[in-house]
Image 1 (cartoon, rainbow, N blue to C red):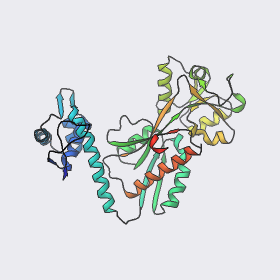
Image 2: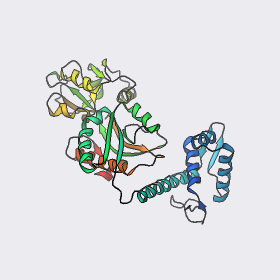
Image 3: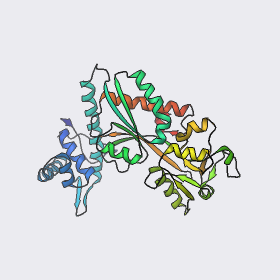
Image 4: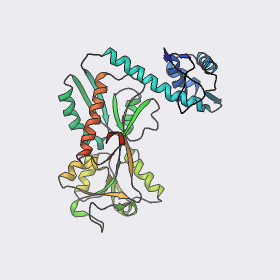
Length: 334
């Protein structure tokens, strides 16, 4: 049992009243808060809805404060409920982590780890990550799965993979997402087909890029959705002449001078280094996207997964610091 203290909010923390709250109650409350309804939470955790309602009533009575507000549209948290959710998550994560660390104390990291990477990330990360894991964790079997972000999101939700890199985590209610960095999108061209008055390397406004003949992923692709959103916000119409959901083929078409594209530099670092492509950062507006390292909040990470997660962060920091991955690391990683 965990001693959870609560009085009216003081400096954003819960203070001592000597009330003992079981971790099971915390998990039930977190499920209610994340699902937004008692019925959905009951189905998720396999508890009868009347029992869940009774638990909430007793919890509110014990704490002496209202935690949720019920309405025909579902459940919303009060300020006190939001505070409890924050601390309950922290306590549960710490508890799970502590139990796992004790269980595996003195045991080497062993076993499989499945890692989902978008194609643009896989281009720069998969090889150095695989090499580092093989050297540092010889008893860990790393499986890297390259796919579109939508597939990675689905695999994370159904626990098909242990770790993933994603750009959009808004719909991942049950996952822990750590922001690693942000990266800006660039306009790409073949060196001998550069269409703009300013040279490669000089920032280019999106309205000029929008006029060029572009090859982009289809609208179902996360990158394309982001590009379309920026264009729509600026009332721009993109001149998309080809759609291709394969990164390698997009780069090949651009290198042959058949079209231009908008990509993250990491996706084409090999082609840039070989001189097959040139690029410029897009501005007016800057097209920036976050990069998250994600794992399932409710699924206990194995020691192998945790160590691969830490190695991933170290490899990414090294790639950024050496200029191989063009991105802006979060402050705690710099």
